[in-house]
Image: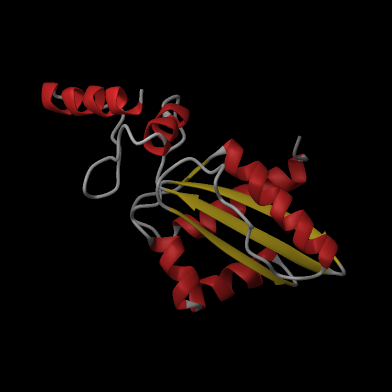
Length: 165
């Protein structure tokens, strides 16, 4: 369970991130836990490192920003000045984020994990269908779980499922 202090900081980081975006990111609990674990690992080892695997992150398109500095504000400012980090912050495909922070050796360690899947009751099912080759989404990389499925799309899904058997 995150402390109220950490939760408050995460809300501030999210607000700072969303200033850079046309469509705001939404927090994803699973990704928050992964980001917190990675931030704690970096703080414990005293070394910046991207996650070994982002496989548990729901979605087909994921990204990650990692940084360390004297405060989350200095790290976020550095992300905005870095073309690679800014690309993650502003990428319109990203819909959700997990933010993790830890402190170690007088430094703040910050991890931001991005995904193209919005937090929803459908996220786990969408991730499963994608990883099992049943659905790959629309050309723009979205799944649009609230949009109706056509008969043609359903036929394709059923054919792919029968091929898996």
